[in-house]
Length: 471
Image 1: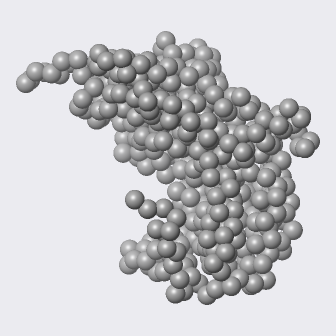
Image 2: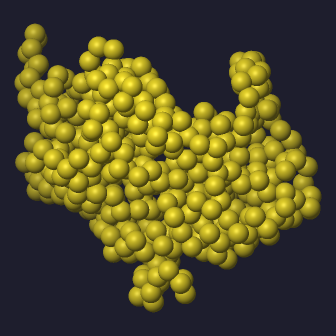
Image 3: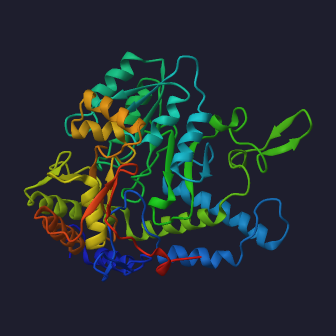
């Protein structure tokens, strides 16, 4: 039993671990054998929970197109969709009288909508950080000048630099766009402290919480609280509900101005040949037929996360992270990026490399010979990863030239493992055993680097995927 949680909490973790869809699914290995799959790639996406799948299946008997339909199924589906929206809002403590909960396809789309709908003025500046996922960087670049708060040598956000920039550009920085937790290092930013800082310098704060929501409790706080989070963005597929739903929460006043960036069915009250009257929120921002099934899945996933307990999840994943750090540190050829002692305020996300091995090769061997799923590369956070790796400007210039020529063989990066509440120490032990074998060069096959893909693949071998899934 975990020393961080009591028996009742441990029993809940064990029960819901067994509710992970595909938990015992066996995958093929190079030698022809089958092995239970170990997913250590939860920062990319989490598996579905069986109760979520069951709730979706239950709802599908009643599913119909929502709003304006007079049939019972349409009325019920409309009610369920609105109820799911309420459940999402309550989960993060937002005032639904003054704020809108808008459903999107994913967090990236929600961030793009945020950038499109935020009321920027002339010469506006967005303050972001070097920690960001591309989805919380590139959309803002289309609307305003973006400047970046620094990180320290371990990749931790430099709060002093953040405040210096807020102070220097006071009046021009309208928005602070910040990750809730890094998808590379797992560092959790002190969001309420930073929100108070942003408001002190007359800026709003938008938090990309995609990496945070299934791991830590988060309260947006009341609108008049100095620590209030103005905009919150996250995605259901990282919350054990991978049915194509993202969430954007923000002040109704932001979205009441002007028209939405995507227009069409469901966004209007009246259309003539020369006039459009937009409908109210949130429908105005959700063009076309919405993903009601995805909203149902997210609402049920939230219910389960609350039942397990966010603090219970945080404690369990903290224990896993400490265990993995210790085990990885015992392999002499492993290089762990970031501060290994910084475990009080981080998620279970660990980037590392194995000396003299390409990150892609390590990832491929883990998959093909150990049945372990990890991720490698720069994790859609190139500036941050390059800072952690110590990539020089000269190396970056050379790399850009190679990529333009279609050569991705020298792409920098790392291997990333990331935990969910269902992962175990035994799974980490299997990872460590596999890494030790790789370090001793005890892997079975010859692997070749594909220049165009930048990926390692076994020579003269490919899986017959139709044996496992087909249409």
